[in-house]
Image 1 (cartoon, rainbow, N blue to C red):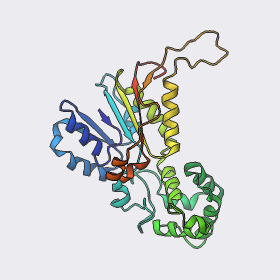
Image 2: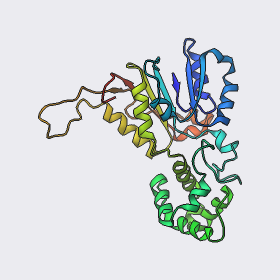
Image 3: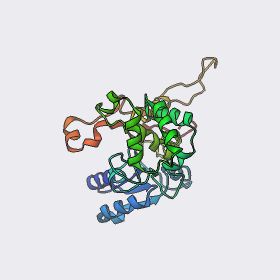
Length: 290
């Protein structure tokens, strides 16, 4: 099995504990969180292999002829480690440098992105990635703040957003900076732009008869996963003008048509799971459509 986003190793621990014959390759781009997983899974040392890097890169460079996984799991959520212990500004509840990179050795931190983006692009990014309806107000506030100095910390950005939005939004059911932080994190790490490539590469490597499971945490991610699985499960994808079907048939069989969501007991035990949705497909065949 490939745990394509291993994080602290919780999913791998559950699978290894339940299936004695299972071996796991754990992939993660963050060396710091991978060290946590190594310690957590030390009892399974002979059955776990760790790979540091992006999941998409791992699958795209998978060696020809190598043993293929019978299962792939990708949890697209950000670990509680990143919010509570990484010190990289993922949370609006802390005062930390505004970084937000899952892999701090790659790409530009969030503060640099905000410093370089034109005001209109910031507004578009907030709306596109998180549906922030006050995106233009927030972008204007960021642009004004930049003239006085960089927006360099999570606390500074959180306070800026709170002051920029209307009072009714400020005192609404969620923190007013929630969508801003989500949109910025998605942009910094290329979470939406890279997801189709990850799905394609993972399905290509998966052994026929194997299963691909994806856990998403917001509607934009879930829509990409749902549409991908739906397309791959279609019997014929030929355009209307083609006189006869040239498809080789569906590449996958859907096992969770509506997705699996947590019940009340799981949410009570694990509150961050409340917005999770699991979709699983079984691979039928190799080929162009896979």
